[in-house]
Image 1 (spheres, rainbow, N blue to C red):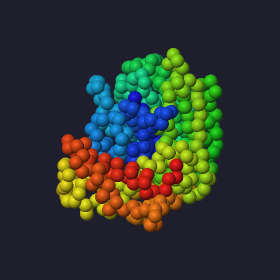
Image 2 (image 1 turned 120 degrees about the vertical axis):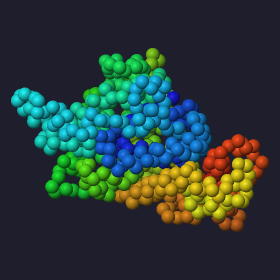
Image 3 (image 1 turned 120 degrees about the horizontal axis):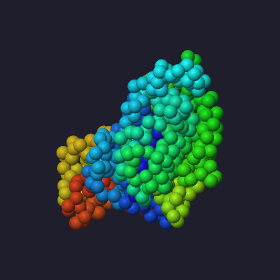
Image 4 (image 1 turned 30 degrees about the horizontal axis):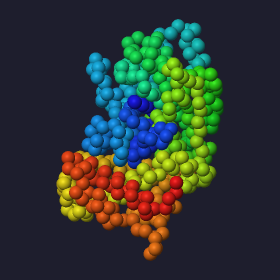
Length: 507
């Protein structure tokens, strides 16, 4: 099954970043029986005309690093247990028909709207006087003057016009060509801005009405496709701007109410089957104020709990049984809505503040990944030439200069550190781990090691070394494996045993 994941606007990129981190930790969608969903490929497509958006660029870099790391670990394998478990691919990577020209990127090409002012895009100068007057009623002067390569600046009425061009793009044609019955579609977007609020309903409309579009294949499969969406409600504040009020925090609630009313009439009504599953997430405790930036300076916002929670929505959607999405004849069922709540409504969120189901999904994978992060930072280099590193295939000192190792440690784990620090520094602080703590015994916030006969059990690099030596010794599993796979698989197995035996159980 392929999950086509359309991340729209800045919020879409930030939620996708959290999904990348969960996937790196080995979090996989589970079916209703708690088993991993088999043969899954995730195909992210970022839709944002604001190419200089720093949130977009950071997410794109992480996606590229993830793909390099995973391909070296597993190649094209789908069903794996371990770090970087979910296979994440571009549209170009899965295309068999090369008649459509497409770049090998996760970014949707919106060339039609990249350079024009909105006034030029709609041909305002060529309109007759009556149509110009009507346009002036529908759009403010600053909206007509908006340069669309910085996004739609909180104006979904601009976005709804401009993004309708998507249906004619090579990316949309490529998507329709590779989409097959059994695949699913998921959208991530905010509802209180411009790009996300407009892009979600436009994309759904074009998919459900695929039969009316020219040059589109698999029309029936698309019109019946299971479609889910994450609608992100207001959760952050902006520093005010006295000279520029195009985007104002005070408008977020009004925009949300208007958009929800519109969505109810077109997407998520009681008898509406355009969107089969919708997830709502937001936070009344607003973030630290983000720098006011309507687009000109890059728009870089700190990571937030809402984005981490939102990243679990497409995983839950992928694991839902088809019977909850389509009827026996294969037609989509009316919308079912989901919300999220913390087990404890606190400003300092750790694993114990999350509900049992959420902990069951992410606790052990994230702890394993964080321990790997600490191990590579503090202990691994000193172990080269000893124990498991000497078993075939040998891990030699030059491994730490390889592209894989540098991509993992210098780039991906650097992004992971930024992500943790940004979530921790927000008003609703996320402190799953004790930031800056290298002692594995105290690494997990408010979770210690178990008590033994002689005191608390110890967890450190030597404990991992001994366990990895034990697993590696005379193990034929690694004889034909790469050193990259051997290292991370050994650590995965060792961490699984150590977490179960040495840390307190919170599930």
